Amino acid sequence: MATLRIGSRGSQLAFWQANHIAALLREHGHEVEIEIIHTTGDKFTDVALAQVGAKSGLSKGLFTKEIEDALAAARVDLAVHSLKDLPTELPAGFELAAIPVREDARDAFCSRQHASISVLPQGARVGTSSLRRQAQLKAIRPDLDIHPLRGNVDTRLRKLEDGQYDAVILAAAGLNRLGKMESVREILPAEIMCPAAGQGALAIEIRAGDLAMREHLAFLEDSVARVAVTCERALLSQLGGGCQVPIGAHSEFKNGKLYLESVVAAPDGSKLLRDSRSGEDPTILGGEAADNLLSRGAREILQSVYGHAFPDPQQP
Image: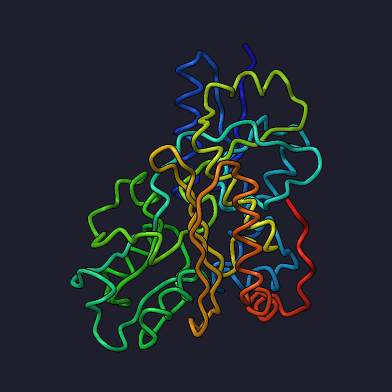
């Protein structure tokens, strides 16, 4: 059996994710190698994510383009991504072969001495480079001093331990995968801090039409995760957003029904729009939520963030 070559970013978390998938493939009898590929998003660690696109000239695929280049050139056979990093529309020539079982999609409040966001002292310094998190933090605590925070999970937690921040907000999934939950004081409900679309989920990308690879990876597919992220990404697509804009989406099954919580917020927290609804078809549900948010002012918020006229959305 031929060796399967996985393309992955080189961060601590990305390497863990690639090794996790590699271990599952080896359990199924495959030989596996991992190739580390440095992406545009990894090269600009001195600026907030929202500024990386402008600095690099890329508006989408900041953490995926170079890996897809390697996949297209057949240097690797499959790519393991954090799904939230993938544009909602894949470039021609690629497909999502599998969405494995999803980790906790929510964000985590991490602090050395403060138990929650609500008890942070006036003007506390909080670290995050996510406009989505910044906007929602500012909406509930406009007094907080939000500062950029880039780097891998260890780097971010070390800055917290060194006292550079009173608190930091990180994805619970990454902390749990790396066994770094000791600094977590609160897992934030989606109604307070709506996660990024696809957060906590992995995406296994292959060359379009690679039937053999699709068959090798079929056992990794989780239908529940696929439906949830399809709903979230339908909303994101309708809003024209990427991973670096203030849009949140969290979908899950409750009592057999699919629920979607979503948010669009001004980066300074001055305006925050939320939508909560349930439905059956994930694509329709995401589209309806996006339409509702747009009708209530999301278009103006996103225009100010994108810095140009916002196009009329296409129906999903």
